[in-house]
Image (cartoon, rainbow, N blue to C red; front, top):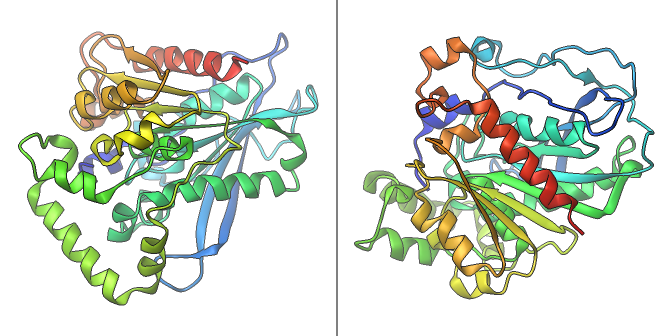
Length: 366
């Protein structure tokens, strides 16, 4: 995957997408809460404790709950992104006995708030949505680690562990319909949810592609690739957390509890073996943009759609690009930040709503 830290870190920061039309006749407020979960079965990359699973949650809140803008993330970024008021730590609505759950996975170097526009939309339509920061590969930690880029299978493990934690959560567990659990992700997060559906990542396959004449922007620069490989060899020899992770690399991360997945502009398509993609039985919905120069559709979205049986495919209309899937920006953000700029005559909020409507329809099918 292309590793362009500055551009990708600009994408998501502390912004929260807007919540849109409600799921019931009488609209309920969208609740917002955070959790500092951990996965006791895996170490953090520093070998100093358990793997962190910092999580944000959107959910249907009780009618009449007061709304405030959550004060999380870096306040310096807030003028660049649309801010939304939610029912922070409000009670869960009892309008339904249980709600479906959607696990959300951000792109490489991004943050768990990156898909707030989708999480809030789903919550407004009667879903609980939980988004995790992927340790070592998130701008939320203030430090990006080579391990976070070189062990993408750990991201799939994060979502399965997050599902365990959500089901056991004292506030949310009893409200989750375990027969309706889904996952969605963008970029590296798109690849993550395809792993949950049964596709298997192969570093060797990615290496072959990036060393071939067919290599494209998804490989990043030769300099970054060589540095990553050199770092991997050092860690393989001396680092216990990386050694344990590499021992898990070849196994399947399919999670049978997850009924369907949505992959938006998924990355590292050449790393997934054709055989494992053809064996996927979980319903998959892929969303792509023609002008995506970060994860070129031909070798990513369209490759997944070609090999995964019965995969749905939506090509976003207009001049949408890889960053269109990011948070909604203010006028100030569009002036200051290149990732906030979409193609001519494209309204990012309208694209988000189109995608969210199609995702909701996909998850609502029997």
